[in-house]
Image (cartoon, rainbow, N blue to C red; front, side):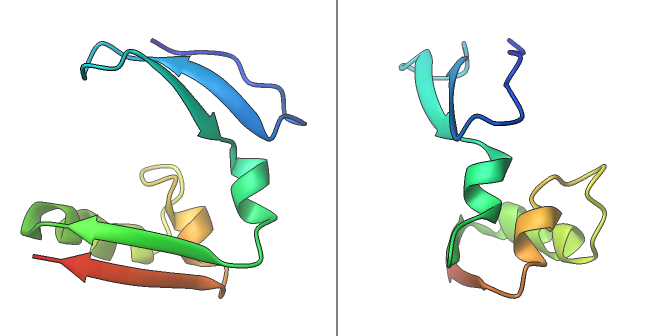
Length: 79
């Protein structure tokens, strides 16, 4: 389900039917971009393919690109 998030908000309430926990609280893009450091934990070969694509800098296809290209991001991968 899509929710509307204020551009000034640092956190947002979201809902999903894709997991056992349907109600979630998430940090917004504004909060993440204002962080001093950003850490990504990528698990599995399939996710690494998406990471490589996101590192190409296509934010329309991969919103994570905005975070990955900040120059303050550390990426950890786990097989």
